[in-house]
Amino acid sequence: MSLIPGGMPPAERDLAGYGRTPPDPRWPDGARLALSFVVNVEEGAELSLASGDERNEVVPETRQHVEGAPDPCMETHFAYGSRVGLWRVMNLLDAFGVKATFSCCGRAVAATPALASAPAMAGHEISAHGWRWQMHAGMEEATERAVIARTVATLAEAGGARPLGWHTKSAPSANTRRLVVEEGGFLYDSDAYDDDLPRLVQVAGRPHVILPYSFDTNDMRFAPGQGFVFPEDFSRYCTGAFDWLLREGRTQPKMMSVGLHLRTIGRPGRIRGLEQLLEHVTRVPGVWIARRMDIARHWRALSGLPA
Image: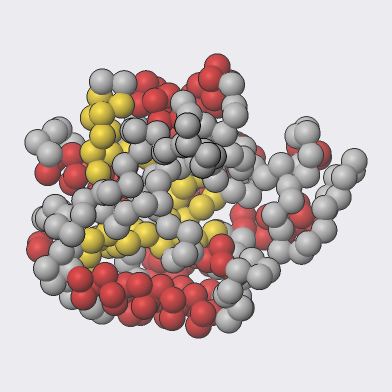
């Protein structure tokens, strides 16, 4: 009997991936890199006693945690994103002609429909980011199924079309991917952080695309202690990743995600970092800047499936 605790990882967990010779994604027009900008829309979906939740949110820009009473400080930090950040970020994306994926929490859009309707009218993708801004790990299956359905209905009404993509805040449950596929209308989810290329998997007997996401090329690192302070910190880091992947793309094209948050990069002291990144990536040839649903459709077509 082994004295080492823990045993082995589950057999279905793929730790090897594509290996040294990943598949050629054959991006449109021979692009060496597919670049996806994801704008996370969470304002109004954060946990709040004032909204009837069981507690207040504990991931702010400050280090306080108010218990037993509403937290106006937290609420107004989030509200900056919907009141100001949305328009500042959209104006900048529009100025560069970049279409992004707006990953929206259902409750945020229910409270402020413009969070989905305005980006949709501008040609951005509206995808699903759960109902509340919460992880799904440990959620009861029936509850999670209802959460997914309510999110889809709310985003479809405000955005004019049902969402095709799903991304859980933090950890999904053991059932999330299956429930997303069983819902019937999703092309992809982004609940993975383990690759620089998409992959096609079989879930509940159906083909399903996984588009990996990233927490490092992400403005969330402006949070206290996470490493970004000045706008140049964000642009330099993301530009470094972009340049390296573009270099690899001479022989092995890849995909890159950039994560944004309205209340974070939308601040006037940080938005220049996004502008610097957009200035760089939009003047370099060989880059396909695409919405995630377009990347998922391309990957399905690459596999001989209807887009």
